[in-house]
Length: 247
Image (cartoon, rainbow, N blue to C red; front, side, top):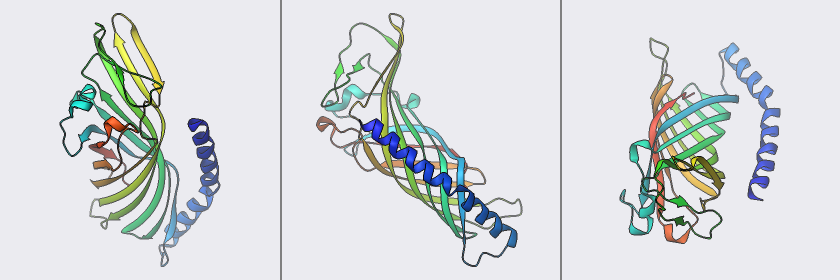
């Protein structure tokens, strides 16, 4: 039911923003052609930007060390990653140096678990099946969200090379699509299981970006818990890495 409602909501939002796409682009082009934007102008449309790729970390009540209640989630730090990007972007450029935008995109967080366990589906709290003698060459536990950031972009004037420095801060809200366990073993081959896995259905967070030209660095932190599960209270996550596209 949650996924059906979310799909309907996203379809409606997509239809609305596409209907404004032509207007926003025309307004932007008109303003750039006149080179006189005393009142600012609209920008945006369907896009592919702010492509983030990096590492993810869990923060257990302020510590990077997992507590005994969460030790089963111990993960391989340099194989646990995040990928996200924006596909819709609408905003208002007040002047050459400042813009506010509302975007929408997709976000994946992927944990490579160390232990040979299987996270249970359809449980009231996050739980797992203990090791059964099967050794997984891959045991990935992931979440998939739609995110909606509200960005405040600051940029310098163009330098002699036609490039700028960028600084962007963005609070955001995300809605869970699903969770997934992907395992690989000699005994069972490749297996995939989908469920919400008690991931927080609505995630609140924020990001900071610093870049030059089309490339930069990002960091994200989520303010509410990673899971809607009482034993995991206080377990949050953050990410950091490289971002491509800062316009």
